[in-house]
Length: 471
Image 1 (cartoon, rainbow, N blue to C red):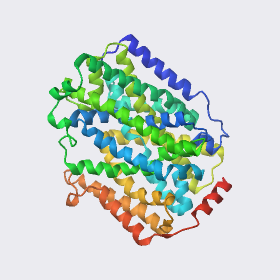
Image 2 (cartoon, one colour):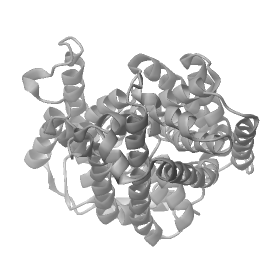
Image 3 (cartoon, rainbow, N blue to C red):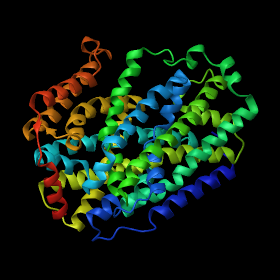
Image 4 (cartoon, one colour):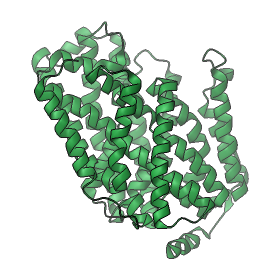
């Protein structure tokens, strides 16, 4: 991609702005766990929405790839199922999460079940929050912009995305998300306006994309689309949602903020899917669909607007990289190491920074191994959802809980079953046992455990109150 001086100037201003916002207020060595992990619970509605929306939409090149290949089906795969899951989270979990005044999901597992279950859940959550997909996408973007090899782009992008989080914690994530939220919407809105003005609207799309691109399935088997609705249930155990609910100033902000966020995601999905359709119409012979958005920008946007759109892509990805890197780091320190030994404020900060470096290293390794954002989403969603969905969801909802030993076995055995099911496909040319996708065996076993072994538990509220008093 050929960028002009004005494009590079915008890029430098953006990176400088991120650093300024990110390190504006550094963590002290004696910062409390609440200040480190949830920013002192000061999140307002605008900050909540900006942070959640930008954090949860990092796979921007994958969205471009899918909409280029399958058209409006992108909305039914990466849009609607996640709106539904987010709505369920707001309806059943948001208020309870904020009222509990806890810091992390594993804390809830520890109170509801026991410490062993919390550790097992923490390991799964740590692996699910390592931002491999987003590091890969960031590496591809840096490669497109600079021409450097993928591994250089991955390494540089990772380093820059975590430096301010290393210094400022969750509060730095939120401050930078406010900037990135604005850029991602402005960049794609400008792109779509330019496309419509220069090439026409819906009729141009109809005349220049395959017929299947305007069907609900996009040419895919219906079972492939359905499985994403189950993978989307991972939203109900999504640490980014819980963390932001825990961090709100008011209880009402958590639920209302998710409802507003759903509207924002729907608008952004309209922008991205529309741009993906134009990419297919204007670049029908594109060799690598993952580069659909950057290639489209290089084709139609003049200097200045090209730089603005590149910033939109970078902002969408980097807002997710920094957030998930910090989630993985805080899970490592507070919920894994912290379960084995008591950590003071200084030790917690030090272990969180170690966890940040560890998660970054794992993210780079996973990204270079899988080389596909969709494959990473599918793999970790297919394992993590069966492991955690039932134990976490019913730790907040209803009065029936599994005994601690069965909750622990549910996490280990159900996640393990899906992992084995998925792993076997690598030795079977990608085919699954009995034609069943990996998420279903583990999820069915987890539900069976709950139905067979759950029992009434009226003491959970009392135990949460005691934990809050201890905190």
